[in-house]
Amino acid sequence: MAGKKKEASLQASITNQEQWEEMLATKGLTVVDVNQQWCGPCRAVVSLLRKIKNELGDELLHFATAEADSIDALEKYRGKCEPTFLFHGGGELVAVLRGANAPLLQKMIVEELAKEKSVLEQGAERKVVKDDGLVNDERKEEEEAPQQSENEESIIVHASKSYTVAIIKPDAVAHGKANEIIMKIQDAGFEILAHEERTLTEVEAQDFYQHKAAEACFEDLVQFMSSGPSHILVLSEAEGSANVVPAWCEFIGPADIEEARREKPESLRAQYGTQTLFNAVHGSEDSDQASRELAFFFPNFRTASVTEQDGEEDHVERTLALIRPDIARENREDILAQIHKSGFTVALQREVMLTEEQVRQFYFQHVDADYFPALLRSMTSGPVLALALARREAVHHWKNILGPSDVNKAKEESPACLRAQFSVENEPINQLHGSASHEEAEREINFFFPKQRTLAVIKPDAMEEQRENILEEIHANGFSVTQLKETVLSREMAEEFYKEHREKPFFSQLVEFMCRGPCMMLVLSKENAVEEWRAMMGPTDPDQAKVTCPKSLRARFASDLLHNSVHGASNEQHAEEKIRFIFGDICSNAELTGDGESDRTISAKEQDNSAYENTEISRSPTEEMSDNHHQQHEGMQGDP
Image (cartoon, rainbow, N blue to C red; front, side, top):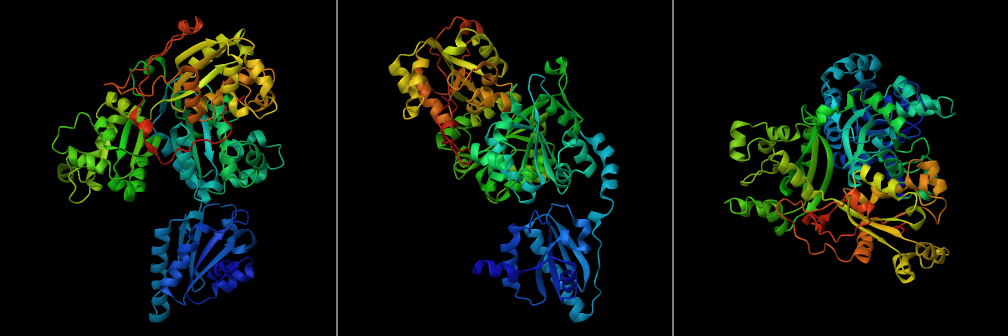
């Protein structure tokens, strides 16, 4: 209770016009956090305001919160979700700040308080301002739109990939969760091909949600979606997938927040949503809707023609960027901002601790250089931020932005380049890495973002009629089949394979079913293989799959909970355990070859013949890295 009293005394609560007018009559500077009733004040700055109040201890400094919905003077701020701070002195508006930018807010409070004291104590003139952000917003957007479309480059991507639109909604943005959600999207293996921050007008929101016009919540939905900035993203799977739409729907969870928390507690909506309307994220329901939404937000988005895919025209490519530990701690946000400003999309991102051996493997061409001991020391001194950057001519553009590799040369010849801007005093090593060529980029990206493996099983009920269809779809979704084995499980093997379900009432039925006839065991390889295979399978219950993921394998091929066609591991650890159980320890001692390309994919013909080969597979050394962002799923150990 004491904490609540402190908070109340720190910020006066203004809930009607009369209290607003009383605030205007207050002597000194009042900083007002304008908010919506549904959104609430910006909690992220409360500790900062208390710190400023304690440090300055000035009786002329006041803080308040004001609900725009119930105050006539704030009518124009209604429906705006973005945090807005109004600075009032002598009953007049003297400054405005949008966004919860803590350093800038602190700077403005100190400056505006000094100005107000100068007015009161020395008779200086008070400079009154207008909130330009409220003037002709829609007209300004209409004027800027043609210029923006002229300047935007076409987003050209491979025709074999599938895409979907993701929206981080105003509620999540207003509460400062956008970057956290983007990080989770990347950790889950989705590739972000385009990303822009945008505030929808009411007209745009109405057009976008026209398919919901007959629903009772339509007006509220339109008002909410136009209340503040959203983040609009185009997503694809890292290696391309025909199932990215259901994969994304599965990742964000049900639209109803209570259902999401009950059925999918790890989903984005369960974690970040507050109620059905304010459910944090949006996803296209099917491929047709995804296409319409892509055209709505990204009219320049198009797939590559055959000639473009053959390399006769420019196309989106990837390069690796490393932010070394010395500046990753202090300057990562500034560097990421410059990366986005330069037209790059961060397709993959992870923070890792490297061992000396891993640094030697990555920089094997530099181990004999004079500077290598300093490089080794730098790269092992803390977490390295690894990024796969995507855009047209990514390798070339990133090298240009970085500047010369020699720090002194960079400062002399290109002081505006990143290596000059973010150099470390008395440190001879530059602080940012970029791939030297397209070939190097692929090798280096594979080093930091290795392919993942999972175990897939085609069950006895699907072997006779659906095996070929399932194998074809596995290939079409970009998986490599690196191990294959057709077998009839003994009762002992089936019981061991499903041992985590031993206490379940369906265990005996499941074991008997799996021993009934041949099944096919496969090791699938791909970035984010575990989650992507699970998305491709669909929910365990075929009836649920038909409703939520109608294009999934179980929706189309399964008949009931027991006879549900396919099996998949629930997380990476579970996948490795089951692979070892079925195929033995096939790659535990493998070493990285010179080019890192020793995987051998089993051909479709070999699969048709049910050929089993104990293929040796090299794994990137980074599979043993400490990944500070990736979280293993700890739920049910595989679908029955």
